Image (cartoon, rainbow, N blue to C red; front, side, top):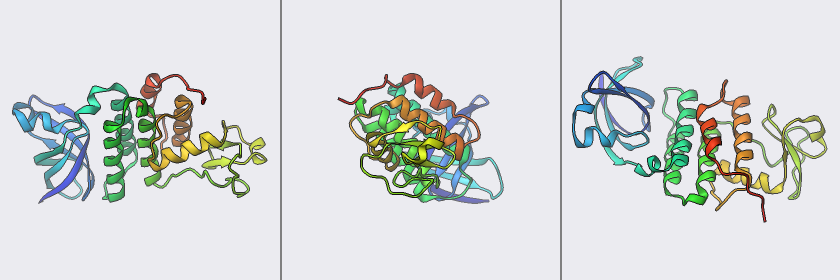
Amino acid sequence: MALVSTVAVVLRSHDYGDTSRILRFYTRGHGLVSAMAKGVRGRSGRGTTAIGTFATGVVTLYLKNHRDLQTMKDFSCTRLREGLAKDVLRFAGASALAELVLAHVAQEAHPELFDAIESGLDTLESVDRIQGPAAALSGVWQITRVLGFEPQLEICVRCGIVFTEDEVGRFDFPAGGLACFECSQYVAGPLIGPLARFQVAQLVQGQIDKEINHPKKHLAVLSEFLSYHVLSKPMKSLGFMEALLPEDVNPK
């Protein structure tokens, strides 16, 4: 058993017994780690508030290989992210990001994934309210991209033709991207025009526009893509997000 310290973000926590808590961390140095935090609910100050969900800090663990549940010695919080708990849409977006990581990621270090988690959570907390839907969608898209499931948006997934700026096609979910106008007659997915294609590409790369058109349609595309390529069942948090997103906004 080794005593190790690593930067970590808390993705989920639940109470255990009268005084303890089980925490799910994604760490920079050791990937996904579950740990027992003994007695933290009986302490004041750092032991209770600073181990909130979505907080980042340095965790010290008694780490034993091949053990599913490790033991936490200490957690020194560096970023609490209290703002996520004050806005239900921001919290839903953070929960979706965490759900995707917990459902798909193996217990191994992936520094780029850690950075994407941090970036997604920071953006969700810092953007203004009108950017909230885009930030919530973008956080999940960024994780999807880093995991190796980036949608093909620049060339047709069927014939390989490069899209023109004004190309209209359909999203071919089984093929993992867009089909051009000619090939779209064989595709049942939604129509995607130039503006929607541009906005999806921005969301995948973490570039948040001031406002996105049709946020619920964007969510439907994301959810369907995940069900084909990443997860075997729908994400509960995306269903929660759908109820919170504003009605579709038509471009002026």
